Structures are given as C-alpha cells and as structure tokens.
Image 1: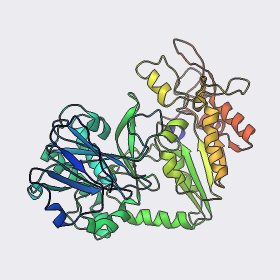
Image 2 (image 1 turned 90 degrees about the vertical axis):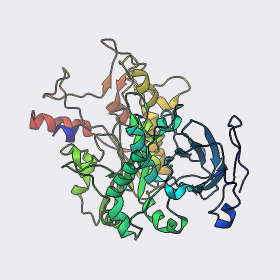
Image 3 (image 1 turned 180 degrees about the vertical axis):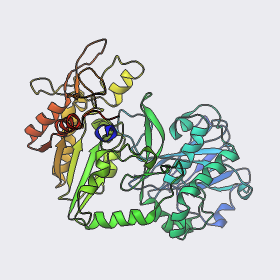
Image 4 (image 1 turned 60 degrees about the vertical axis):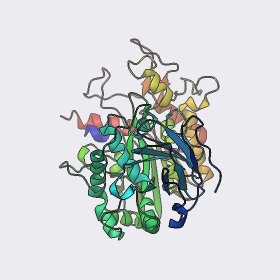
Length: 477
C-alpha cells in the first residue's frame, strides 16, 4: 500500500596529438574493391549509428586500449568510416548526436550510444564493422559496470586503459540473446545476429526493432552523473529486467504491437509526465508500483489509452534535461491529455544535505513560490522556478493542441513527526531548520495550485485525496 501511495562525404579532423596517421570520410557502406585499397597496417572501421529521434551528423569517438582517441563524424544518415593506424583494439566507440552532450545532467542532454569492439578470428583482416545502437549501448553498459564503472559514459571518459576481455564481451552478447532471441526470430533475423557487427543487408529488419525502443542513460543520484543504460519499449515499459522469480524477461513484440494498435486507435489518450510515484516499475519490484502503472485499468482500453512516461527520481527539470519528455512528446497528437505530476523530487534543494546537497540543487532542484504566490529563483536562472518549469509543459501542451492537467504529488506516508504512521500530513513543503539550507522555501503543492489558477489549467489535488485515503485505511504493515 505504501508503494502505491509513495514512488540518442566531408573531410574529417582527428586529434593532432595522436601518433601515426588517421584519416576518414563519412559515407554509405562501401564495396569490397574500395576496402582493398586500404594499406595493410591500417584498421578500417565502418558502421552505422541508429536510434529513434537521433539527430545527425553524430560525432563518433573511438578509444583504444591505450586511451588514444580518434574523432569522426557520421553522414546525415548515420553512416561513418575511418581508416587508422593509431589505434590498437579492443576499442570502445561512442556516438553523440548533433548538438548533444552526454555528461552533464544540469543541462539538456543528447541521445548517446556506445559499442565495444573486441577482435575475433573473423576480423583479423583489418576490416571491421562496428554499429552503434540501443542494443550495443546496453551491452556496453554491462561491460562497463562489470569493469567497475557507473555506466558507458564513465567507461568512455576514463583516462586509463580499457578493461575489456573477450569473456566480458561474450557474456554481454549472451545476455543480449537471452533478452532478444524471441524478437529476432519474429523479425526473421539470423539466430547468431550481433547488433555490433551486423551487415547492411539486415538494415531494414533491424530498424523495425530499433523503432520500438527508447534508449537513455540512468541517473546515479548520489553523484549526479549518468549511470547504466536504460532501455524501454515505446510505452516506457522496462526492457532487460528480471521477472518476479529473478529470471531475465525476453522482449515480447506481440505485446508491443498490441499496445501500439490500441494507442493508435484510441479515442482518448492520456500521457503522464511524472516521477517515481507514477512510474512503471519492473516486475521484480512488485508489489511496488506507481499509480500511472495501474491507471490504464480504470478505462476501456479500446477507447482510452494511458502512456505512462513517468521516471523515478526525476524532477520536472531533470525529466526534460535527460530527454524523457522528448521521447514522450514525439507520440502526442492534438486532443491528447497531458497529465503533469511533479514536486516529489523538485524539492531536493537542501544545499547542506550531507553527500548530495550540491548535486541535488544542481540537477533536481526547482524552487516553490513564496507564501504570496510569487515565483522564486536565483537571479538569471528562471529554469530554477518550479512554477516556470510546470509552465513549460503547459505551454507545450497548448501550443500543440493538447489538454494539460496539473496534479499535486501523492502524499508521503509520514505523520507530523516524520514517522511512517497515521495520521498522515501534508509533506511537500520546505523550511530551514536543524542545519538545512534552502535558498528559497515554500509549499510545492500550493505552487501547483497557484500555477493552475494563473494559467487557467485543470488541477487534480492528489496529495489531499491520498492523505484522506491513507488516514481512512490506517497504518499498513
């Protein structure tokens, strides 16, 4: 019960500091006769970058086991090619979309992908194909975390040599097949399909799989940095997670296709922007669920479809910066409803909090209105206002023919003394006491009400209703 209440052919430039020579062009897949002209002491690398909504040309960075790097750009379709004698495999490749960045959570991030290349007997000719896509990013994330990194980005940025073994690589490939073999068979892709090295002849089939996936990086909240790869289907249901018995769940394409049909045909569609209190939890977390996860059960699925894009641990600002709203909004159409339920993490503005205060303020915090309903934020930083952050979603909705609805956050199961006992009281307020240090204090639920009134938006007071519910039901153990 508490869980329900609570929770991406021009000349190329390479780094001048690299020893040896490196040159490249971006192009469509080349034929064998072209490859034969490459000198034997050169490594020819080519491939394709693929991810839904990714903007091209993307920037490819190739790092070898010594920490040496080469940079190249793709063409407008995501193809790249480079010839180099400066790099020694194994290699890690990263792709950052045009005008994107992958490391800072306090500003808008791009779609970021990675792939690992480990030489095999078949690749000794010096001609290597390395594709980058959501599946290769998932594999790289597993290899990076096995090596002790938070995720792909820290693996890419590390100044030390690459700790990649053939065993690490083969284990990540094995896990990929456990998750995707059923989907590969349904799409008639070969049983030994490798998302890193697949040839161009499988382009159309594999793109139909990529089109069903959203790829993003997780968030390591205590450090405020990107973490491991997060992979979901287009309806934000987690992929590459375990079931309730601890067994890895394979991708169910039939379920995705069925949901897609219902979403396309529904008369009414509700999109949810929110945090952990609304988000979809993996099966192994049961019975912990977000309210958005079960909201669909309240409607006839042939008439009303709910697309729950809420993400745990995100504030209204971080949700946008990480690109989750970009994914969610890509599916919206005029007449849809946009439910905006934030505030649970926006209040993480205590700069004095041990271990993560400055991180929270930098990445999550937005400030509430004052007691008179006036916006509060540091001079020149309006993005730090909770009301302005909410208005972003309101203005987006209205400018795209959507119907915005504001919601106060669900209550925390805490009484006036901070105990997990009834009677539950309003808890989305900040004030300075006992060593806390909030630059601005106030009431987040009241700020939502203020914003709804000023912008003439429908508002659902969920905090009040969940407090009433909790106090009616009583303590749950």
